[in-house]
Figure: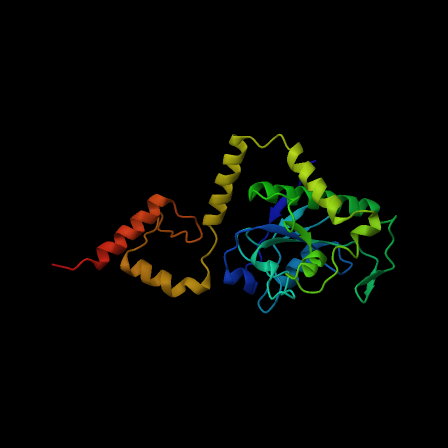
Length: 266
C-alpha cells in the first residue's frame, strides 16, 4: 500500500522561519514520548513562535505529514556529547505513539503490547516507507553506519541529546533498529515503480512547490540590495522565487550583472 504523504509546514515555527539549509546525510527516527496518536495535536502546538523544536515529518497510523522542507535544518536532536548535532546532518521523523500509557523516567508504563500491535504495525510500515523514500531521494544507503538511526543511537554516537526513543517502544514489539534498517533497504530494492519518467515528475513537482516557499528572514537585507542593484530579477509574474535552486545559466547571469555594476561608468 502506498504511503499517504501530505504537507503542512510549520510556517510560524522559529525553525521554519530561520530556514537554515540542510544537505541530508541521514534520517533520525524519533517517537513523541507521549500517548497521543493524533499528529495534529503536535502540529498545533509547534506551529507558533517560541517553540524550540521542529521535525521534518510526523508519522501517524494512516499517513505521514511533512512539516518542514527536506532541505531545511530541523530542531530535533539537540547537541550530543561530542558537541555536534544531528540537526546539521539528519532528517527527522516523529512517530506518534498510541493512547493509553504514561511515562516514568523515560520508561513506558501501562503499555499494552497486544492491544497496540495493529497500531504499531501501521506506524512501523509507514516509517519504513517514508524512510525508504527519503533515502532514495537523497541517495542514502540505510545500511551504512550512522545513516538511519534513532534518537537513542544518536546519543550513543555523540550527536544527539540523551533520549531513549525509539528503543523504549519498538523492542516491545520485537523490532530493533537493525531490523528497521534492513526493512528500509528491502523497501528500496522492492520499489520497481521508480522509473525516469516518475522521478522527473516528482522532481518537477518538488521544485514547483519549493519555488512557492517564502524567503528566510536572515536574507532580507541581501535580497533588498540585490533587487535594488538589479543583480536578481523576478519572473514574468514578478515573483523572485528565492527558495528555488539556481541553474548554472542563472548563476552566470547574476554574476554578469554584478560585473556590469562594478564596471566604471563613462
